[in-house]
Amino acid sequence: MKFSSRAVAVLLAMIGAAMALAEDLEIFNAQTAPEAGWGWSEARIRKRGDKLIVTEINKTGVVGSVYFDQRFPLLSAGRVVLDVEAVPSGVYTLQVLSFLGSSPLLSDEPVKNSNRPGRFDISVSDLKLPTEAQSILFKLWLGQSEGANMILNNLRYYIPLPPEDVIFDDHFADSAKWSATDSILRPFSSGYEMTLSEGKPYGNILLNHDFASDGHSWLLVHIPKVERGTITVQLVAFDSNGDYSQSIDAIVAVGAGWHGVRTDSIEWPPKVGKFQVKIWLGGDSNCSAEFARLLLIAADSL
Image (cartoon, rainbow, N blue to C red; front, side, top):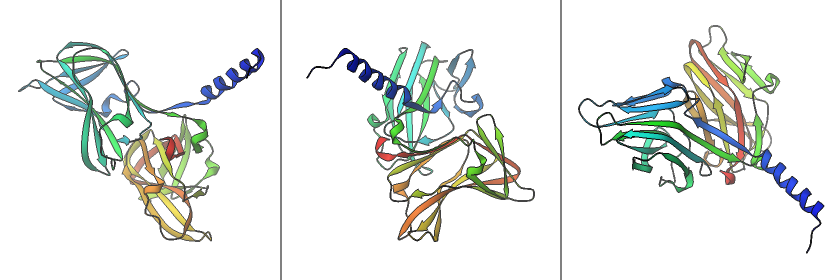
């Protein structure tokens, strides 16, 4: 079968447009992450211009590590990119730790004892982690030399996200979508800030949208900032007649970052038909949280 040059041009334009619509959903970026978010264990990490300098500072040995003190949803379609500018001394290892809830599981080391610079593009599906793992944490090790150090361009975790796999996407730009109870919503540059009403120890916001409970999907929420409190994401279940059935704590007592849960991992009550999303903030009287995005994504794509 032959195609005219015009037909080929149109086809290529359509493919290009589809590719342009695809999004890399960025879960973590060391360049933009706050320096205070890193934990030190016999090593330190400092920003210097557009680089990150990691240095071993163990006074009794030659091994140290730094880790970003936040767990991220383990999504098999995700990619981890480690971009190393230089290794002036010693060797480095990238360790990916996995967790089930708050319980640590096994870890993997996709880059181990390397002394060479370069860019490593790692598929999450290739990591040797337990199938029951729900979240991951990134740790960088330095060793084999006193004062071992590396110059890091970036460490990034993202998910290629085809638009057709996005079931729901809210950027917290329209407060009318949310009903606040014992809490106050105020706009900020990238979404909404939530605070508690005066005298209330906790409050919530409810998304005025129904989701089918029979779908195999990931619920992801991006919370850039939480101060003096914690966030719990609750799924409010209704039966097939629309009557309230049960509220299920799906993401419990978390801080800032991206958090997620597979809806098919939830123990739904019998005859459940749909659910809504409710987000709770609890803490002291001055606690607050910022919300930037909430997505429901087809699980098969992740």
